[in-house]
Each structure stands twice: as C-alpha cells, then as structure tokens.
Length: 394
Image (cartoon, rainbow, N blue to C red; front, top):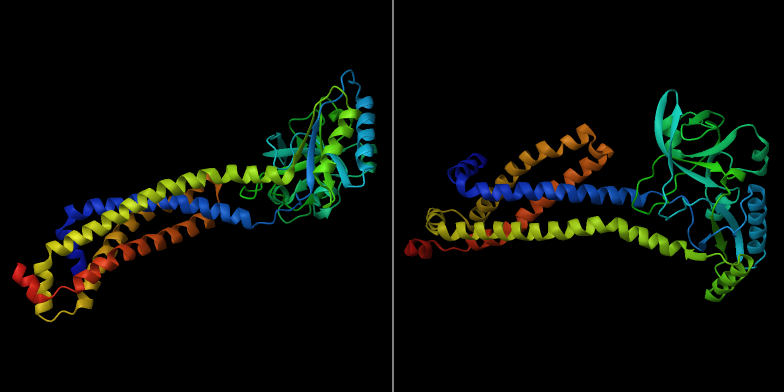
C-alpha cells in the first residue's frame, strides 16, 4: 500500500512539489514558534524565588549639597527609620538601580580558575532578603558584622554557583571581580534563583554585594514591604512624609506588581507577533491542502468510480487519499527535521537540547494533525462517490 502511495505521488511530483514546500515552510515556522513557547513555559514553571506582592519601590534624589559619604549614609539611616516607624510598613531596604522588574542591568566579569564569567551584580543592604523573602540555599545573608571584615562579602545565586563549583559548596571560596578595584570577593552564601526580570525569562549568573559607604553617591532606591491593609491613602501620606523630609527633591513611588505585569507583557510581545504571523501561514497552508485534495477528487472521479466498481470500499478510498496526504507531509517533515536537529546538536542560542527536542515533537504532531484535519472531509467526500455516477460523468 505504501509503495503504491509513493508511486502515485512520484507520478504527480510537479503538482505535489508546491504542497510539500508549503508543509516544509510551515514546519520550520512552527518549529520556531514551539521552541519559543516551550522555552517560555519552562521558565514560567520555575519557582519565582521571591515575593513581589505588597512591595513598593521608591526612587529619590539625594538632597542638594549633601556629597560627603558619611553624611549620605547618616541621611539614609534616618530615612529608613522614618519609613520604618510607619505602622503600615514591615521592612525597608536600600538597593542600587538593579531591582526586580526594573530596567537597569548592571553587569561585570567574574574570574575563577582563570575562567571569566559574565555576571549581573546587585548592590543591596542587609534587609534586602527580608523585604523580598528570599530563601538561602547555603551559607548566610549579609549582616552588620560584614562591615568590619577585610574582604568583600558576596552572595551567589544557585545557577552561578553550579557553573563555578558544580555540586561543591561555594561558601568560603574566593572569586575575583574584574570590574572592581578590590577584586577579591568572598562567598558567604548562596540563594535560590530569583526570576527578577519577569516570569518568562531565564535565570542567569548573578551575585549580590553588600552596600557600604562607597555606594552612597547620587540618588537611590528603596524597597518597602507594606502590610496588606495599606491603601491609597497610606501611599499619599507616605509621599507627603518623604517630600517633607527631602525638600527640593523628586520622589517616585511604584508598585512592584504593576512593574511585573509590564515586564511580562513586554516578554510576551514577540510570541504574540509570531503566533499571529504563523496563524495566517497555517490558515493558507490548510486552505491550500484542502483545495488540492478537493481538486484531486474531482479530477480523479473516474478512477475512484472504477475502483468502487471493482469492489473497493468507500473506507479504502478515503484511507488512500488521507494516506497520500500523510506521505506528502512525511517527506516534508524528513527534510525539515534535517535542519531542526542542527539546533540541539550545535546548541544554537544557548538553549537546553531538551527545549528543541520537545519543540520538534510538538511540531511533528501539529503538522500531522493539520494534514489529517484537512484531508478528512475530502476523503469522506471521495468515499461517497457512487460508481455509476462517476463512470457516467467520465
């Protein structure tokens, strides 16, 4: 049966070439779409690693005329106490511009065993972990005791720790920051990965360093964890208190849950565009496949009628037409697979091979379902052709 189907397809290779080309292009386009969908789904299913609910970030400018590091540090501490004294506030933390769901990306190069690793760096204070409820995987977070040490303490995320040390403990090891004057840094702990760039983004290499007097220039950012009972009236009151405490400076309050929604919407933009484009393509391919099969039925009514006259059942006629469409799609898929398997073999775009493999399997299933859907009705129509009518028309 299969040999007969291949013979029929070969005899009409010119007519089938365009259809197979459309299926090949559909396979390649849907491979890209499924790869992106699988990648986003895998990232979305990973734990977020921190809590963003009821967290506000507050940007401010250092008061004019205050340039001394000690004076700025004293001002920050008084500002912390002022905010912390409000009953609706649970925790307060200072940070640099690189905050969850923000737009700043601060990176540097980390050297260990003569190997350089790009990494994102966060400069935070001792309360940062409590505000975002970050979980330690090993070691500890920063404390006031770290201010008196002769080394710069840092905390790695789990992904970076595994890349540097594998399954070994990272606590106590020394790594170098190639972008800093004081290059040597001592690892005091490792945290679980946090998806601070959005729910659909992959976690990369990152480490956290403790904020000190060298990080007090310019403006700053505050992360404030508030109680669920806080409302818009409290936000207005907080703004007034800060404006009075820092006259002639700008104060900006943003809600982290809203920033998260914006980040996720931006991440989903490319996939929505790809789905719209691929949707139009698939509709055209489906209409083309449906039209070709319908045309073949009308053109082959005499052949179908003769087969019915010599005893062929309607089911066998329908299976033949569906089988021809499946063979055509199989040929296209074999060609498409040759290109698709290069992505996991060559680690293109630095994605995990499993992501590509799942996308390939979903793509194959999708193409076969599309072909079955488009060929089912024409095959059913062919099965309903009566021998006498077909032979009379011929």
